[in-house]
Length: 352
Image 1 (cartoon, one colour):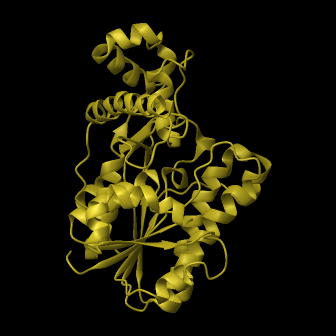
Image 2 (cartoon, one colour; image 1 turned 60 degrees about the horizontal axis):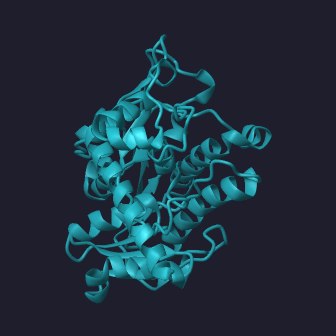
Image 3 (cartoon, helix red, strand yellow; image 1 turned 135 degrees about the vertical axis):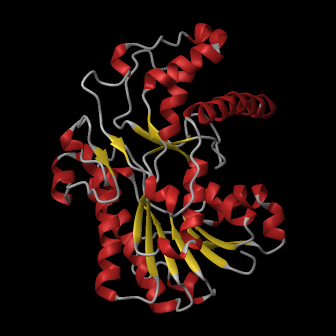
C-alpha cells in the first residue's frame, strides 16, 4: 500500500516486529512507538534499509497510560490507520492493577482518544486483543464447545485483584471492552477491528539478548527443548497460532473494508504439549537424549473427556488468513532456538 502511513504502537514486541515486516513488505510507511530511544537501536539495525529510505520512523512514548501519551505522535504525523499492539504480557504480576489492568485499559483508551482528537485522517484502528478475552477459564476444558468471536471472558477487575492469576485475562478482556465502548459512545470517524490470538508461537525476530529474556509463549517451548522442564505440563489453553499469521491478520484487518466493526478469533486450531514433545523426539532424537527431555505422556495429551475448540472461519473468510501447521511452526521455531544458542554463545566468547 504505497504511500499509506500506519502508526504501530509497541514496535519492539514479539508480534509487533512481525507486523513491521508485513507492513514494510506491503509498501506501507510505518511510524512505530517504543518506550525509549535505546529501544530503537535494534530495530534501526534490523530494518536499516527501510529506516534509510524513510519508510520506517520511530516515536518515543515512555508511558502509554499517561493522559495524552500519544498526542504529540499523532499531531506530528499524518496517518491513515493505527495498529495498537502495545500491552503488558506478565504471567506473575505482583500488583495486578498497576502492572496489568491500568496499562492495558488506559493504554488502549489513550490511543483512541488521541486518534479522535488529533488524527482526523485515520480511517481504522486495529487493536491486538487475545484469546484471553474469549475463553472462559471458569468453564474448564468444556468438551464439545466451540469458542468464537461472540464469546467473552466474564472476568472482572475485582476477580483479578482477588485472584491475581486472572490478571492477564482481565487486562485483555477489559481493554478490548473499553475499546468497543469508546467507539459506541464517542462515535469517532474511524472504525475499529480487534484481533484475538491464542498462544502465539513461531520465530522470534524481536531483540533477544539471552535465552532468559525471550517472550512468554516461546519460553515454554524452549524450557522443553533445552531440557529444563522435567515434569511436562500443558499451557493452560488448547488453542494456538503462528506469529506470522497473526501479523498477516493485523495487516489484512487494515485493508479489508468489510472487517470494520468486527473482532476476529485468529486461531490455527488445537494443540497439546504431547505433540510438541513427540515432534522433538522424532526430529531431534540426539538432542532430546542429551538434554534429558521427557517422553510425552497422557498427562500432556488432550483430556480424556475432550476439550473446547475454536471457530476461525471469519478470519479465513474476511481476512483471508491461511494458517500454518503446527509442524511448520515447530520446525522454524526449534531451528531458531538452536541458531540463537550458537549466536549467544559466540557473543559471550567474543566478550571474554
